[in-house]
Image (cartoon, rainbow, N blue to C red):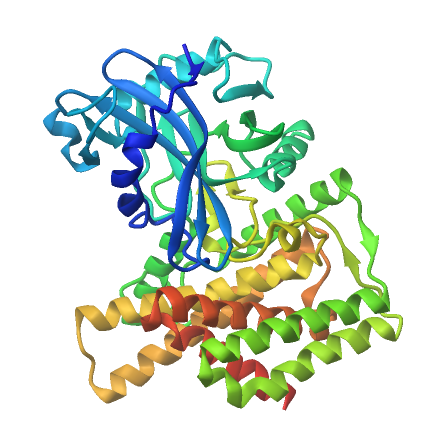
Amino acid sequence: MSVAVAEPVLEPLLPVLTPWLRTRRWYGDAGGPLDGIRPVVVSVVHDDAPVLVHAVLRTRHRNGAEQLYQLFLGLCPELPERLAGAAIATVPEGRWQGWTVYEATEDPALMGVLLRSLAVREPRGGPRLEPTSPHPLPVGLVPRLLTADQSNSAVVYGDRLLFKIYRRPEPGPHLEVEALRALTERHCTRTPALHGTLYTDAPGGEGLVLGLFEEFLPVEADGWETAVRQVGDCVDGTGTTVPATGGFTSRARTLGQAVAEVHTVLADAFPRTRVTPGEAAEEARLMNRRLSLAVDEVPALDRYRSRISALYDDYARHAGRGCPVFAQRVHGDLHLGQALPTADGWRLIDFEGEPERSAAERAAPQHVLRDVAGMLRSFDYAARAGLAAVRRSVEPAPGLRLRHIRRADAWMVRNRRAFIAGYAEAGGADPWCHPVPMRAFEADKAVYEAMYEARHRPDWLSIPLGAVHRLAAVRG
């Protein structure tokens, strides 16, 4: 049973939790050096060894920025060898002095305890579950932590249920929860069904969305992994299809259809509005502002600044001339990694929007072609990643190297076209009929990618820079 904690049980752990927190993939260091950290919500979900503690911490940075982080912590006198990799530190003092504190999401026993506690709806003062499905949660399934490199954490129960943990929780309503609830209620077959949402109450009555339980979609590989593998086959000629076309084209077409179907359901569930010329001008201003910030971080973008800015201004003039532009709820961060090729066709996941954008930006209605632009950029990334994988296995001669580049380019072009065709066939706005907003949105996405890669993966920076070069040349 989960109980609220009145005594300061977490304070003795803060000195050992703070350095560990900064090593996590989901830690956001946008505020610079830490100036302090304090508990906001703490509850003991299970009070017998091993203990399960749920906590939400608030970090404060020297520049004044604050961020919430959600933790599930296990504590036990002696950590089993199978959990050695989950260890954080030895508790220096307090009621668990000398015990080992560890990452509880890696402990199947504690994750099972958590699910049973939520299923019987007994928690008091801790996380609580708001069910969406009339069916009870399947508490007897064996949990396991997914090890994918993500900004959140995910625990799978058997092959039926996925618990997505928002490591940086936000006050509700939550974009992904809203979208999945609406899609589930309308029986959308292109997304996982929502089973429930996890909440907690912070001091001051602020309700925080902690995570969700959704249908688990077992696949051998997501769309990104599948596409990169197909690129490799295409580039080195080992595939069963013509190298220049690749074996992914039919899938790209059906993926476009799936995205259009999801957009149609979202347009039915949420307001769809016509963008005014003033709103389009403001959107162009924001894109230009993002470009300026990106140039400061990525000086290589400066040579393209005027021509990319002109693409944004073209978009504003396009809307100002009376060309209809509509905004609605969209996915917000669509790429091949967010698409799962299941036995029943493509399913789209992770409706949170771009993690580097503010909550206000992610919540604002957007043009559906922004999702299309995101997927087109992903085909470019897949082509470059597949090409790089082939080069790592063998260093080709100059002539063969050029042939590999041409094959990767052909794969990208053909699959981008197939995706666009599928999207238009399923009733989506035909991107070929909207070249001005498409160029602006793809450029905006490539600029965002350049800044992201400069921060996190400098070796990949050439990919978005290549896209910026191409888009600038089209306008110029």
